[in-house]
Length: 343
Figure 1 (cartoon, helix red, strand yellow):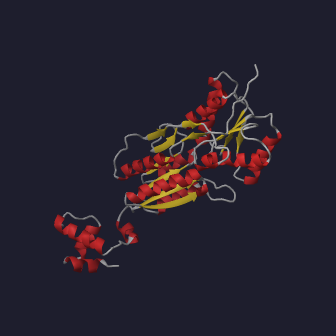
Figure 2 (spheres, rainbow, N blue to C red):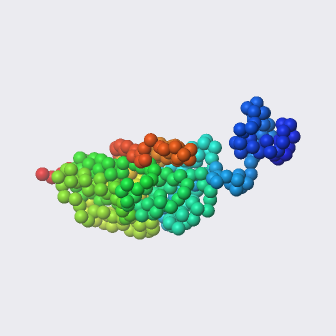
């Protein structure tokens, strides 16, 4: 691999001129000479020392991705199909923009702030952070930040965000189940944070009952544990109490697929004895038997829009919108059946 000095000898210029071209300081370099040096750099496959560049610049060419998620027992956070899809999309967008991605998985607020302060990040994308921490990060991190699937406690806070119309997703799926004749519908959430993705979806669930003129269930909200054994015990409880619910509405396809697998092993026929709905429309919903009725979201679009918003901020420009809210739609498959309601 050639050095700057060797590149300079091939171009017939000084090492300082080559360094200026590498660092974009080309005011005193003719366009013809700049092109000549760039051509030699490519031919010699010159790779700049990123550590040295970071010391020279106030910002690096590194975009940080923080996944703020407590992993399930026995697995890592990025194993979730939703997470792996959006991180994969972000990596592609960041690489094609000429930047490098650094991923950090944590559920520690102080670690987030330390990460952002330690590295000279060009920008930061934060996924799934609780509301109280989102507000603190928005106020304290100097780098451009885009939040994905994050909610904020303080109305009017200055932040840039991409998220889903979670409340409408919860509403439309619950209305779909109600239209199928179900009245005893349990809502199973990933976490108890408020405000959050799960609380917004639960609000939609509650509002669907209100819109239908029905009483909101008081005993049908369940917060799923990160511990697999505890979740399996909950699914077993549903199997042993068949009259408690006719439908389970999970706030994530991961758990809907896990419940179908568990309940099938216990002898329950899905959806004949118990209907199950999910949220996300990820790979698991399409591979499970029966295929899962779910709320669709375009995860790839979400990742692309987040990257586009971030690079707009990196260029010190103002994005057209402070917050992008993406649409949802119901995908009806095989895991929900009609329920006959007695008059």
